[in-house]
Amino acid sequence: MLLFRLFGSALLLRVGNVFGGGIMTGKQCSSSSIRYLNQSEAVALDQDLFNEYKFSVDQLMELAGLSVAMAVAKVYPPSLYKSSLIVCGPGNNGGDGLVAARHMKLFGYKVAVHYPKRTPRPLYENLLHQCKNFGVDIVEQLPHPKDLINDYNILVDALFGFSFKPPVRDELKPALDALLDSGLPVCSVDIPSGWDVENGPNTDRALKPALLISLSAPKLCAKPEFLGDAKHYLGGRFLPLGIITKYKLNLPPYLEQEQVVQLSC
Ligand SMILES: *[C@@H]1O[C@H](CO)[C@@H](O)[C@H](O)[C@H]1NC(C)=O
Image 1 (cartoon, rainbow, N blue to C red):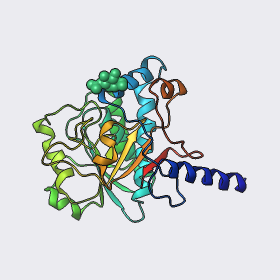
Image 2: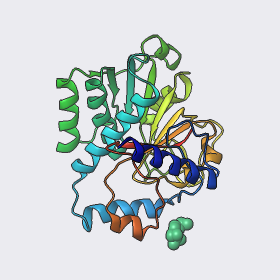
Image 3: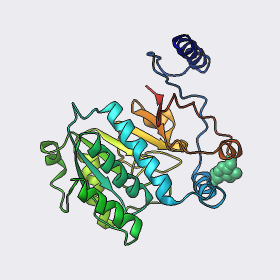
Image 4: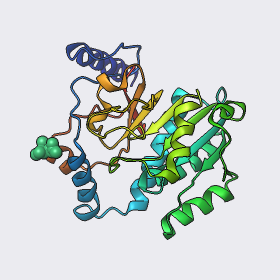
């Protein structure tokens, strides 16, 4: 058993070296051979999961949110980063955030959610209801961004996802400002909010996440040239082989039962 694992690690190290992957520290860590999806491919892949593979939104959201919580906990463990604020948008990205909030609570974080623009659909209402019942604090009015540091150690950005098209609506600007100006580490779900899904941070005042968790497969804005020194994880371990083949995805393998894999160090 141990031999197998040692052999496996050695193999990963070699693959990493061949592709000039990030620094190998005994953990799996690779990036440069990855294929990045453009916006229409991301939309099409999502549709395939629902239409061809008969997944429900709830199912995928649960696994996506769980992997967000797991990646956050790996980089910012609750023993050191006790208090978290999850900023949720009106769409599926916000739903992933609500799921992540519930799991982060179970992982031992103090969790607050800011969810300024709510979607009146049972899925979202139920997720919010679950958050409340799990002891997640619902924050209606955010303090000034500079004051967030008094209450929180990390922020989770679940505001906009891969279907985002600018401009940012006025009612969501304060939520984005909180992510931009708090000075706290920001963990972005799938797409750093406000970024162009394909061209990355192309505004003067662009978010600089400390951690990005790409879901199912990274989008073009997750390229290292845009992410800089941010940590990058892949989550959403639910893609069927047919999709991996159809979209020619070249994803690193998840180890054992892990729900996330690190893409760059
Ligand atoms: C997205 O990628 C697909 C597949 O490579 C390509 O056919 C399509 O033209 C691309 N879309 C845009 C807008 O670049």
